[in-house]
Each structure stands twice: as C-alpha cells, then as structure tokens.
Image (cartoon, rainbow, N blue to C red; front, side, top):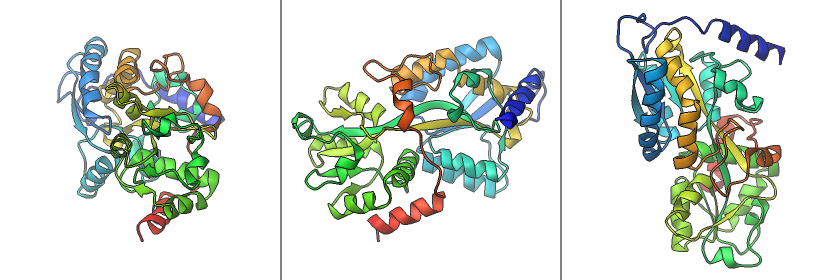
Length: 336
C-alpha cells in the first residue's frame, strides 16, 4: 500500500508538464496531436462518447483529437500484439475489457504508470497498485433468463444453480471474449473446474460473447445464460422481456481498464484523453448509453441497477490462475 501511495504521489507531482504529441515525440507547439485509442467499447457507445469527450478536450487540451479502433477485446489484443511484434503500434491509449491482458502488457514493460486525478475516487481494487492502469468502466456478469424461464418459480437464483440438471444453459466463449475469460477465471476459482464440467455434461452451449447468449435466450434455444448485465438492459430496452438475476453467490464485476502505452510516456495529449475518459461528462454517457457502472462510486448506476457498493463484497474477479491455464483447461472441457 505504501508503494502504491508513493507511485500516486510521484505521478501527480510530475503531471503538470505539458507536452502535446500522441507518441511522445512532439512538444506543446508542434507535431501531430492525434491520440490513437484502441478499445473494446461497443461502437454505438463510442459514437455517443465522442461529443462529450471532444467537449472535454476542447476545455483541457485544445487541438487534441482522437482516432478510434473499436473491436472485441481479443481482436484488439491480437492486433496490438501483431503491431508490437512488427516493431511498434500507433495505439496510445488502450481501453479494453480483459484485466489479464493488461497484466501481460505490464509484465512485458508495455505500459506507462499514470494515475489520473479522477482515478483517486475509485475503490483501490480498480486501480493497479503501481499505477499502470485504472478502470474506465465496470461490466457486471449476471444470469439472464429467457422470457419463459423468468416466469418459473424454480428459476435459477445463483450461478451454482446453472450446473443443476434441467435448465438449458448458454455461456460465452472465453477464448474469444475478454469479459467471458475473466468470468471463467473467477468462477472456476470460486467453485472449482467441476462447475464447468457439470455445465458441459448437461449440454451447455459455449459460443460467442454476451450478444450471442442474448440471441439464444431470445429465441428460446436456451433457458438461462451467464451474460453481461449491460447487454440484458439494452435488450430489454426493446421490450424483449428477458429476466435479470443478480446471483446470490456473487455477480462478477469486471473492470474495463484504461492504460497508456510506453511510447506515450511524455504525451500530455494522451494523458488528456485518459483524463477525459474518466471525467464526469464521459462517465455519464458510459452509464446512460452503455448501461454500465462507473468505477466512480459517486456516479449513480443505470436505473434499476443495484448500486456498486451492494455488489462489491463477492463480485471482484480473481487472478489466482494464469491466463494460459484458464484457456487450456476450458478448451479441454468444452472443445476437446
């Protein structure tokens, strides 16, 4: 904890130097002030964020503009890895949904410590102890029910219930989805791998991400699924009547980290974008349009969603197993 405090104080003390230039090569009066953001935030949410982000930057860093690359967490990681292996990436700010990938980048020396003032309002569990990342938003993995299943008196109320006989279950594929990977890592730590073996033995479908699980619930192909709360809320905005269950054995809250890449070490433009992503204006859009919790407890959650404080005690993801072990074990259970 002392080390974390020292990092924060050091970073804040050095944060007043102004050097605009997305790759740390330009000063405040010259160079390209375009910041490249790679993100897994859904494109419609990015579209909604842009006006608020641009308005914030106009006040704090005039002339700075953002170029986005938006795709799933695993696809973003694959592109970034390929670019880095080839000698370098234009990515200045990374905003995806796989905390394990940030741990890998940190271990490889690819991230720059930076603690935005707004990050100091977050629970410490959402900020890297060494300042290499903070949470930009929080995704919450819960149980979704088909319209028919949601009316049943014996419907599932806990993740463990999904392993019982009878209910047809659908989950996402952690080999292609960052949020599903974190969920599998967390629930296999909580319940053991026998939980997933039981799911497999009853014919559980493991494919795609949360949107694919939603489709199987809407069609009635599955009765229940492990799915992101924001996807359920967005689906129900169209009157789909899906049931939402906050599991009694603990939802899984997944931080969507934000971090600076090493080549943005001296870029005040990149830091301004980082700060703007955590600003009240942008966080309000993420909550309102994206239907996600903000990591800032002072920002109210979407309507009808439990406050962050009520979910935290049993909700945080676990990092006891290495990513390779999680992926290979899941692959062995479901696909071999």
